[in-house]
Length: 317
Ligand code: AMP
Figure (cartoon, rainbow, N blue to C red):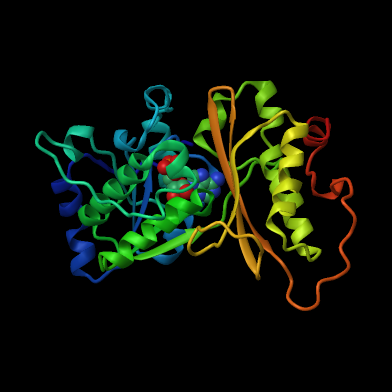
């Protein structure tokens, strides 16, 4: 990590706007990657994508207090700004925007941006609607502060990306929202800043979230379109690892309304707690069109979707 001097870090709205003046005047495309820091491979994939598509890449690092529903989660959230600046630079960031909370929420701050409907369900129901109101308010502010042409988000937080798209469409914000695929660890666990807080034993069980989703995806690919059977297949894998999901929902990928049957595509989302750590994941289920093939009897999940021996030993326990 010594090959690059980190890109400049700016801390105030005025500094960021001044730093972007010449790029804007030159008509350069500006890309923004909003993060809460503790950068991992998932964040870096967004920065790399921004680098490929934009001439100027801004990475924001701000642990936004208003989107945390648990004080302990906020206090324990990992912070590593120097390391983050190095990693972001290496991945292609030109500028880091790392404001203090008082810069973003000065005394007297009293505005919130709220998307309704979509924010009541799943993460909104589990964490409280304030979570998404915190997300939309900070993302709206970051878009206003930076004025990017493109902003990059991860599919791992699928509902968050949908809520941001809704806000941008409803408020006629002049920015393209780009969503990129979930980056995973070698055993399928979605990369997350919270993974570092898992104990070794929890870390061995955590890939079951992804494995369960993959089991359901395989069943859907075989022609199964019934939501309860698809959810049961994923739940089975979680149960065998001793995990009780907070939710395991099959929804329409556009509206996030729960569906009984997958017409073509459905989004299967899961949230589960391992001790103090709450993890989420999702996968798109695709049911091939055409006549439904004869359904297989409820068989043991196919082991081919397990990606490591570790996962097999724990998830099939
Ligand atoms: P966070 O720092 O957790 O707020 O995440 C910042 C951005 O990185 C969000 O758009 C997330 O969806 C995205 N992100 C987080 N984890 C991953 C991952 N494993 N793969 C791809 N994107 C991710």
